[in-house]
Length: 217
Image 1 (cartoon, helix red, strand yellow):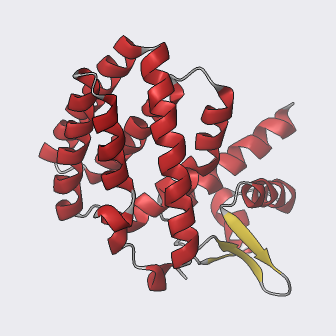
Image 2: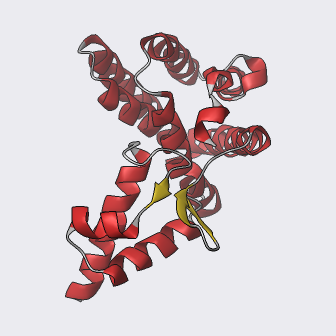
């Protein structure tokens, strides 16, 4: 029991280090460095890396080592298209199943995002940004949608943090999130879908077009 708990703790710590950018996208991960920084043995670290590999957060290259994932232009576009489908359709289901909760929770998150922006708390803003999108899907009461979203959420959070606490991005982002929340409150679901398309997909002007893949490779 204690051994399993330690493995879960190590897994969570390494995952957090990847998502928050302590390990950059494409960076090699040294098991020895992890042993020293986490004061852990090889076994739980290797177990954690295997779990993270299954989630797509790390890749293991033969005769080279373990690296944080990186995204090619095509991979990023595929990911964002998948995200748009899951998020927009999940939102429609969430609105049908839990309309009032969806309105209330998205508006509460917007308030926290505005507060974080006013206080220049970029890390808090990005956390609330992630929670906003999770909320759109999590109220749908359909495990297939929820599981699909969870599968890509850590990858998306890592990529979002890779863009960093960019003031221009956050000022544009808060307006877009507010517009989405307004459309949900107005029960204009077609408008919400269009706003999500513009917010997520680079071809419609989303901030992801600024994702510098050469730095992530």
